[in-house]
Image 1 (cartoon, rainbow, N blue to C red):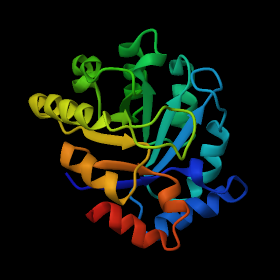
Image 2: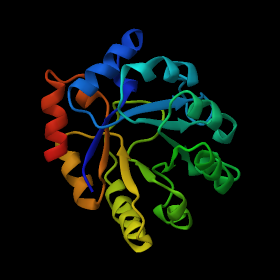
Image 3: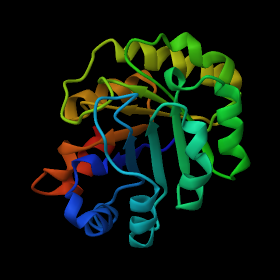
Length: 216
């Protein structure tokens, strides 16, 4: 599967988000990663459906909406209607995970499932066939700029084996501490979609950094 680089707008300029999203597209990004935090599931608050709707006209790239919120089923429709192409929810945040994944699918949006660092990879196995993407958090969700957690490598390998076994075309995304050296490790383990925040947004030449991550 082709390697996708998904710059996380959590590292962008909140006052110029539309322009930053367009800049990432112009510099060769494959997707835009959009982190939604509610101050409950994670100790931070970011943005909601209105911001998503506002940036949608600035890019033709898929918008990869990562809901780090409690009971995300309450907001699936709003994010779908605001322009999400992927909606990813956390295993740990859903009372009824299957109903939540089905709600995403019913909106005609690609289905993503994420696990936090303390959650074993085995929990995703029963849901692989319901997913278009599985996201392994390689840092604790809530804040950008954290150090990559080495134990994520084994999780990616395990999930990659589940995906192969299913025969389904499921992307494996990794988010947190991605740079030129960790990109090599996660890709070897089976990841094909790399979320990068500060590494891309703070790069002197974002296009070179995107190419570096893609070809590392």
